[in-house]
Length: 271
Image (cartoon, rainbow, N blue to C red; front, side, top):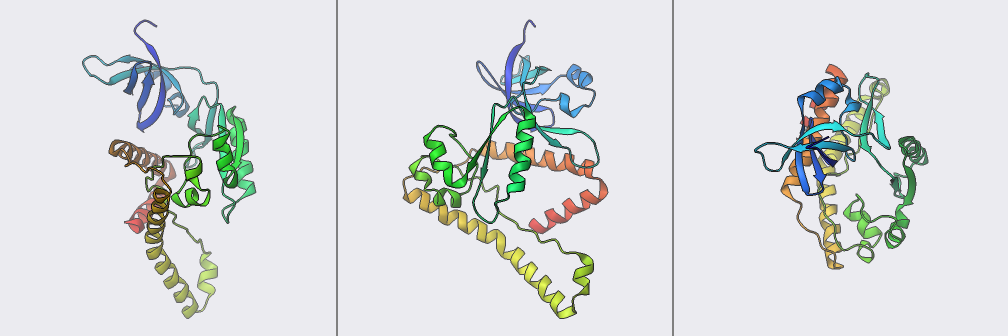
C-alpha cells in the first residue's frame, strides 16, 4: 500500500513494541490501533523475531514507526504457551535453518535433542545438529558464524582458532535445582533431613559466585590467546532485561496464583 514499506522484526522489546530493520536502517515500531483490533487478542497474530511487517514512519518522531500489518509467514518456530491456555507461543518466524548445539558432557540428553528436532521440523526449517566437539569445524566450513555459549566452552573448544570476538553478558549463570518428594523428605530422620537441607542452603549460597568466578577466569584465558572481548552495549542489556521482565509477567498472568507465588519465591532467593 502507498506509504508503507517492508521491514523485518529483529527484537521484541516489550508488549507490541518491536525493533525493525528497513532498507534505510533500524526503527522502533509500535502496533497501531487497527492492528490490535484485527488481531482480536490472538497471540499468533502479533509479530515475532524474523517476521516481515508493513510499517510507515511516525509523523514528527525520528526513529519511530507505526506497524500496520503482519506479512505471511514462510515458517515459524513455536512452543506451547505457559499455563492452561491452549495456544502456541511463537519464538521466531521465517527461519531457513535451525542449529541444535549440544555439549558432550553430563548435560547431554538425546531425548531432548529429539524433541528439539521435532520442533525444528514442525517449524518448516531445516534442523542441523552440531555437537560441541564439532563447533570449530562448523565455523571453518561456514555452517555457523555466531553462537550463544559460555567462556568455559570457548576455552574447551579453543575458540581463538576459529573466531576473534566474544561478548559475555552474564545471562546464563547456572543455578541447579534439586526437587525432593515431600513425603520422602519427611520420612527421613530429623538429623539426616536437617543435614540435607543445610547442604542445600550452602550450595545455593556458593553457586552464583562459582559461576561468576569461572567466567572471569575463562574470559581471561580467551584474552591471553588473542581474542577481543568488547563491552556489551548498555542499551542491548536494557532491552534484554525488558524482554525478560515481559516474558516473566506474561507467564505469571497465565500461570495463576500458584505460579505467581513460585516466581516471587524464586526472585526472593536470587535477591
